Length: 50
Image (cartoon, rainbow, N blue to C red; front, top):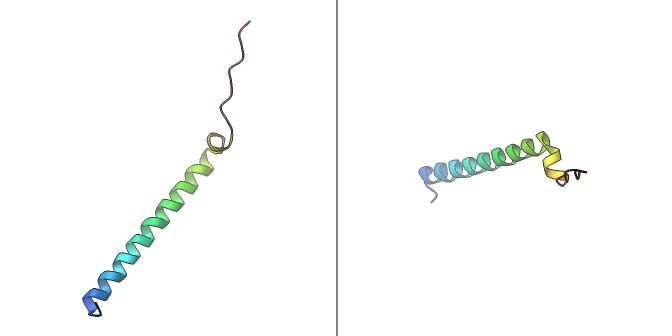
């Protein structure tokens, strides 16, 4: 696959996969930082009624 068409195809495939993985990584980091309480703390128990 050393033809120009093959090289362009491989290069574009690698670029698309890299861009998609970076979008996924930055998207998940943003969600974790937006709601840290949901990720780091356990659920609180309601107070017992007397």
